[in-house]
Image 1 (cartoon, rainbow, N blue to C red):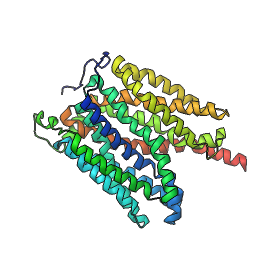
Image 2 (image 1 turned 90 degrees about the vertical axis):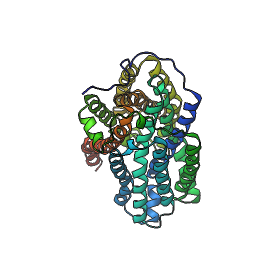
Image 3 (image 1 turned 135 degrees about the vertical axis):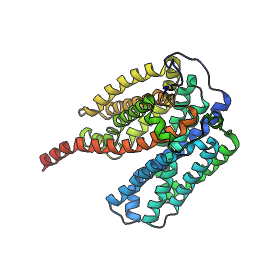
Length: 389
C-alpha cells in the first residue's frame, strides 16, 4: 500500500500568509478550544466545593474528573467509525451542541450521580470536538501555513489557563459552584451561532472520496499504513513526555521548593502568559524553517527544561517560576510542529477518523502517564514520610 504523506518536503521553508477567511475560521475554532479546555480544567480547583456541597469523599470527587476522560476516550474511538461520512460543519455543530448541553446540565445538577452523568455527556462530545478541530485545520489550511494555524487554535488552552480558570474560580466564590458552567454554556451558545453563520460547509473530503465509506476503514487504513502507525506512536511518546511531569509540578514546587498554596497558581499564570505570547512565534518558525527542524530544536530545549524542573534544588520563587515557565513554553511549542506533522500523514477523506483515534489514544496515554509518574515518585514520597516521622 502506498504511504500517504501530504508533502514530501516537510522541511522546505514556506512564506504563505493566512488568508482573511482562514483567520475567521481559526478564531472560532480557538474559541471552541477555549470553552472545551476550560470546561475540563475548571473542575479541579473547585474540588473542595464539590466535596462540601455533595458530601462526597476525595475518591468520589476523582470520579468526576476521571469520568470525563473515560467518556472522551469512548466518544473519540466510536466517532472514528463514522465521522468522515459527514460534512465537517454539520458534525461540528452537532458535537458542540452536545457539549453545550452537557455543560449547562452540569450547572443544574442537583445531586452527585446527575453531575457524573452530565460530565460523561460533556466528555463524550468534548473529546470528539478536539479531534474534529484538528481535522478541519488539516482540511482547510495548507501545510505551508498550518503551523501558524495550529498555534492560534492551541492558544485556546493557554487562554483557558490564564483567563478562564481564575475568572471561573472568582465567579464560583462569588455566586456559587454552578455559575462557571452556566457561563461557559451560555458563551457556547453564542459560539454555536457564529459557527452557523461564519463557518463554511466542508465536504471536500466527501467529494474526493474514491471508494464508499466503510465503518472499519478507519482501523484497517491505520493498521496497513506504517506512517500512520508511527504518527500515533509519536503522539503517545509526546503525551508521556508531557504528562509524567505536569500532574506533579505543583506538589513538587510546594513540598520541595517551598511554594505556599497561594503561590502555586503563579506557576500556571506565568506559564500560560508566556505560552500565549510565544506559541504564534513557534508556528511561524515551523512554517518558515520546517516542522521537523523546529520540532527537533524545541525538543532539545524541552529535554533541558525537564531535567531542570525534575532536579531543581531549593531556589528563590522567581528562579523556580522561570524554570517552570520554560517547561510550559517548550512542551507547548513542540506540539505545534508535532501536530502539523501528524495531520500530514493521512488523506483528507480519512483525517476525521484518524484524528478521532488519535484523540482516544491521547486520553489513554494521559491516564497511563499519570499512573507512571505516580509509581515513580511513590517510593520517594514514602521515604520522605518515614524520615519526617
